[in-house]
Length: 175
Length: 81
Image 1 (cartoon, each protein chain N blue to C red):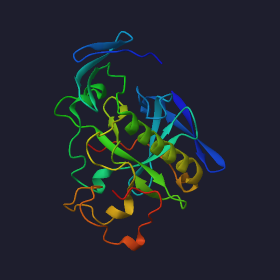
Image 2 (cartoon, each protein chain N blue to C red):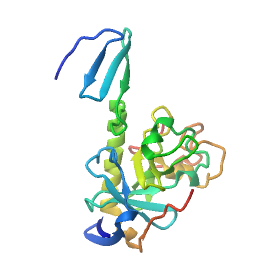
Image 3 (spheres, each protein chain N blue to C red):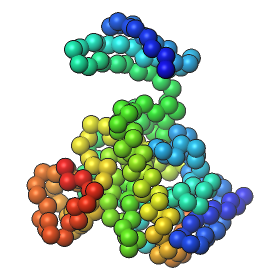
């Protein structure tokens, strides 16, 4: 069966038909949006995704694949979070991180502390908080750009930013 | 707000499924053990609030600034391992 998913795009709204079986269920919701349990995931350009609830056109998240920035992310995924996702000990979820868009509509910061974890096999997801990880909730993406494959852990402030002039400070975690 | 006095080793039940145990009482801290069903998210309050604030910012940034996402949207995208 098809489900209509509304997506708010500025002033207008787009309606997209999605197969119901393609929806991802979030039994605990996403933090702050616990009332929404069903989402559709869309691929966007440049390795980005849109996670859009079917219940409210204004509640959607642009996600990115954190391993594109740091192949070692995350340093550890909590074992106790696997069972609710139907994952065995040796299995790993797909992890995608929520971004916040700049005025221009491009991802500006990324929440590495609380990734979205999905088990694609049963299409169940949750937001996991990596409580003692040291990852930021608001990491500047420009800080990591071009660092993919580097040995420096993503988002952990081990050295000063290489180009501070280009890094806007306002309201952004600098560790 | 319900206020209870408890000593180390004692516990509190919230509903039928959530159990909070006082593990250790220090001078300026308390260590708690919490067992809850898997669908109950247990987080430090300040961390929950921080993530919630960030999630709200993220969602509103998409709703307001995403006209460029109007490019064809493909469902799925979970083919990776």
